[in-house]
Length: 119
Image (cartoon, rainbow, N blue to C red; front, side):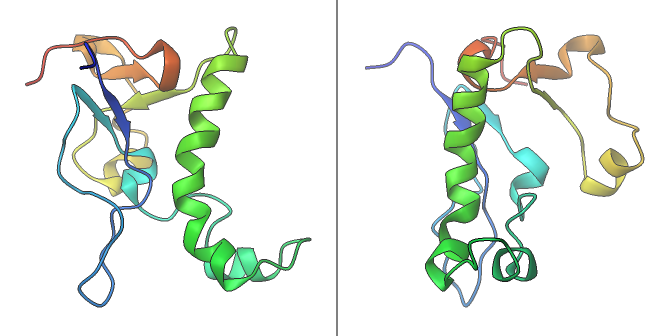
């Protein structure tokens, strides 16, 4: 068994009563990049107009592949680590209200995630 499990929830939306993503926290640390919603570059219009002319399957898997890319980035970028900020809703984050690491309200994403107590 793992001593520590960090989860990147990159797609948690439900459509037609189904989702292949998980909304519930299931790890020691659960991080929801972009609120666990559509990831940058993964919207239907962006995928269909991309240089590769994304297929329907590319659209479906884009958000889930983002978790792998974020983790690989954490292995390759020691100087500039990606951070996740604790925030109550996406609008507050967009306004910059949640961009603070005070009181353990942020954590590194991926390999360098710090083990923290659950609240």
